[in-house]
Image (cartoon, rainbow, N blue to C red):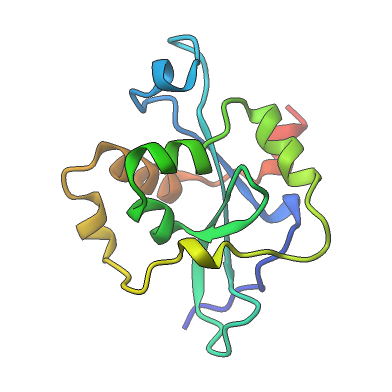
Length: 146
C-alpha cells in the first residue's frame, strides 16, 4: 500500500498539469498555440477514508476536490468547465485562495469506479490527462517561481 499524506489545501504539494495538446482551445476561449488549459492535481488520501488509500485528486474551479477518476467519468462539457483552468495564474490563485478545511465534491463522485484503461479507451481528454499526470514531476510551487 502506498503511503501518502491526507488531502490538504496546500498548494506546495500539488502538481500543475499543462494540457496544451488538448484540442479544446476554441471551446475554452484560449488562443491557439498558448499554454493551457491547466489541471491541478494532488496525490493524497481522502481525510475521511479509514483505509488511507492513495488517489489523485483534481481541484475544481469551484474550490472543491474531486477524485481524478470522477473527473474523467464526467460528461465532456462538464469536466472542461469544472476541472480546467484557462491560465496557470488562475490555477495558482485558486489554490492560494483555499481555506484550511478540505472540501470534497461528494455529489459528483460516482458510485462505480471505472478502471483507468476503460476511461482512457477512445477518449483523447482522458488519455492526455493520464499521460500528463504520469509525466508530471514539478510541484506547483516550483512553477510559480519561474
